[in-house]
Image (cartoon, rainbow, N blue to C red; front, side, top):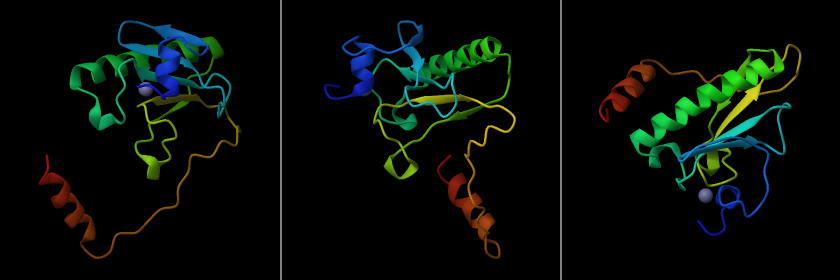
Length: 136
Ligand SMILES: [Zn+2]
């Protein structure tokens, strides 16, 4: 996509610190890391969100995420990480090209990925369960 910053990285129109690349997936260091080593993993084809990515491409993407996470963990000697994917503007997706964050975590790093907890009303959780199941 023409004005997509991630497509420009894929096309080597702008530089990035690329840690992995194959025919369908590319991964590079986030230039505004939550922690140092924070990687982004993206499909080379422009898909906007998780729901737009076809199954076979998604499998390749997730396998790459696993391999990169392993390499990242070995490189920094720490196996704790968060895997985050923001989908849609309301969820905080800043670049409209699907991407998965791998954020290494360290004891006491004070990084906040927390949220407050909501409460279901009487039997409301069962209604949510049934409504979701209707579409599966
Ligand atoms: Zn793109």
